[in-house]
Every structure is written in C-alpha cells, then in structure tokens.
Image 1: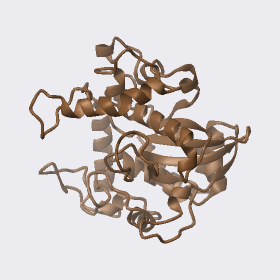
Image 2: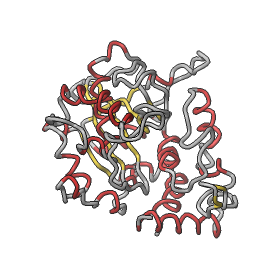
Image 3: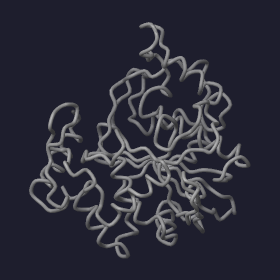
Length: 336
C-alpha cells in the first residue's frame, strides 16, 4: 500500500471510530472477503448527509452505475464518493459553479445547463443542473459500443458546460483522484479471459479502438505505434481516452445533446498524493513525475487544455456560501 493511501486509510478509519462525521456508522464491512476498518457498514453514510438522498435518486433516475456495485461504496477512500461530496450540492447553483471556474480560469463568463440530465432513463423530464456526473456521449465515437454512464466505457467523473469570453462553449472535464496510485501495467498487452493465454485479446481490442483516433488527434502526440506506449498505462490510459472523448464530442457536436466548441481538462489530484504525482515512470525513460510525463504526450494545443489542480484549491470559493459543506470537506479530507 502506498504511503499516502495508508496515511489516509488510518485517518479516515479514526474519523469513523472516534467522531460523528459518519453518524456513528460501524466500520468493518467485508471488502475482498475480509472485514476492513476503512469500509462503512452503512455505505450511504459515506456521502455528505445533505446530498445523500438526492445523489441516490440521481444515480437511479439516470441509470448510472456505482463504482464496484449497485449501491454507493462504503470505501472511505473512494474517489467517486469524494467527487460527489465536493461538487454535488453545488450542481444547481450556477453562480457558485461559475465562481469555481473563475477560480481556475477567469476567462469564463457563464455556465450552462447540461442536457444529458434533462431526461431520465424512464423518459421523465428533469431540469438539468450545471454539473453532471459520470457523463458519457450519446453516440459511440470511441469504438466502445453503446455508452453507459459509469460502466464499461469512457465516462467523465464530473462535467461543466461553460461559455468562454470568446463566446465559444467549453466542455470542462473533471477527472477526480484521491489516494490512487498505479503499478506498471500494460493495458495494450492484457489477455482476455475467454481467449488463449498469450493472445493479448483485451490489449489488441484497446489498440484497435483508440490507435486511429490518436493518430488523427489534434491534442495527442502521434507515435509510430502504441503498443506498450504511455497511452496504455494508468493513469495516462484514462487521460488519453478522456482527451479523445472531448475531441470527438466537439467534432460530432451536431449528433450530441451536449454541444461544445472546445474543452478544458481538469485533473483533480491531492498535492499530498506523491505516490501518483511524483512516481518515476522509468520504464518509459521518464523521471519527471506524472504531470510532466503526461504533458510530453500532449501537443501544444493539448497542453493548453490540461490543468492539474488540488481539490482543496478547487473548492475554495464555496467557503462562505456553503460553510457547512466546506467544514465537512475540510474535516473529512484535509485536516491532518
């Protein structure tokens, strides 16, 4: 276990055992066949109490899959839960969502309702909010077959749609990390369970899906070949697919409910997570850490559209208007 993950596991477990932040929910729920002190038995209490009911209904209404199952995870280190805890309460407050954007880049002048949330899976109309979660395209532009929110396709943790001062509409993609770190694993060489060992079935399928799209991309650097490239190692595999997703959403905007002219890719990672940020990707002869390694895979235009930010910095604008939420987030995620 990484140092940062171990630190946060202990801290979150102590919060559960010694404070009321999880409303005295017991820990020790089964995870990978063993009871763990960092898994809540009342899994829904992993969500901030003011959003709990609405989040559950939102996921149900739009047929969104939860990480690891059909209910919110009780795992105290879940990045999906962390993203929802930080942003969900703000989703219907356009002024606050805009303030958060302006805190990152003061060139945005308005946020727009996100139309993927205007109709539920039961065809019931809803008033769309200004932040949407686990967003997918309407059409399959990445050779992934039918997109399903949060499951088996490129899905965006959180999305904002904003009007730039140039009058262009921007997709603001948010990829949220908490304690994640990644061992070297080559997704371009992975086998399929239903294929003969050594046939690299999953890896071949991934190369088939994305190689031509990378070749044609304005934002990703073209290589002679992509097998065993940085694009097929985490966390870069996710970033590559999200970059392609944004690009294809723009190219195919006339086929999509969410229509935009440009994008900004926000990578939310705690600055203390050195296991992710400062890892040396020696296999690829890169020793500059995650952000520099990824920027070397982006063209000049791609680099202009990528930003890594600490979550505590991201949510600073909520401090006064949403003081109770800010106190909860500070106590839960940032008090050391």
